[in-house]
Amino acid sequence: MVLKLKHLTFCIHPEYDIIKAIMPIDPPEIERPQSRLVSEPDFGPVFYPPDSPEVKDLLRNHRIKIDYASMWPTDTPVMFIGETHGHRRNITEVLTQIIPQTKTTGVTHFALEMVQEEDQKTLASYLNGQISKPDFSKALEGWDEGGGQSTVKNYVDLIDGAHKSNLKVIGLDNEKGEQHTVESLAERNRNWVKILKGILLNEPGARMLVYCGGDHARYDFPMTANTLLEEEGIKSVVVHLIHGTTKWRNGDDLDTAVAVTAIDDEDTNYKRFGLDFRYMGDKRPIDYAVHLPFIPNQLDTTAGIEIDETEEVSNP
Image 1 (cartoon, rainbow, N blue to C red):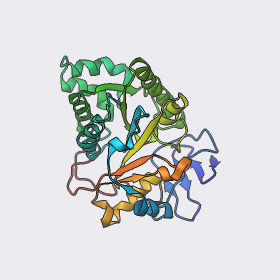
Image 2: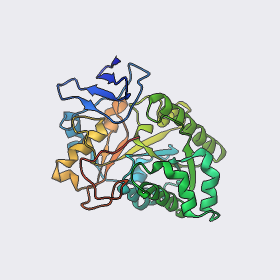
Image 3: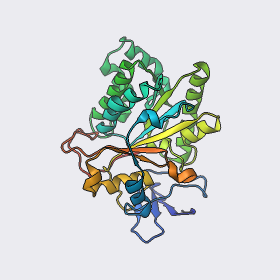
Image 4: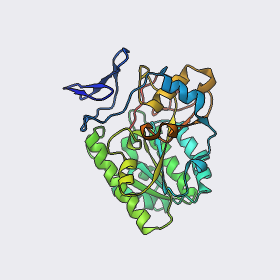
């Protein structure tokens, strides 16, 4: 099956349901691990080679000082933090930078993809000390993607940190079956919006950090949580945590292409910096990205081993 989009041709493999995207400027084929069903043929992300003018322009001209509080407008109750799953450096950034900085803006809630809505009572029991950490961790065991307990430990640490910062921790997801199609992501995102909207209606003045995979919060995919929230009249800002631990080096969505480019640039690979995408207007994929530098010998994978800069990782 072949779908013609404005910028790309998508070929859906009939057996594995894996999309191959062919760039318009003669690079080799790009095969991505996510399987997505493109329901709206005129809508889709633009893929950029790492050395494209857009990537170079972002790195040269649109770096900013990282200040999460200033990224979050006062009239905007929700900030989405999008991650690539399975990396400890994301957790460290949230606990040591994002939560402390946004506390000054009055953040009240920490909502996350990694806990199912149906496990909210279990989460509450854990945070109240009524069940043990090992027992609570069983609710997250689906996040042990081929790597023991390290990914679950990351997210439990994240929950512990948010709770210790006096944030109300909320489970959002209702994932059942296939996760990686547009239709299934949209169904999950609608459930998130229902929960977020309910909290904002019932608790005037609430400000919410939402932590999730990057495909749930961006402007260039259909039916993302932030765009669905906007349809409800609720403003949000989208920030992605990026780093060059990916092997999809021929092209990707713009924020990932920036991270891949950083691998090959000593001026960026080992530096932490922000990027402002808002100059792109309606064509922006996200509002901001924060590049988290490569740290040699850092334990940063689901398997708890030293990272390989070409290691395959998942996202959403």
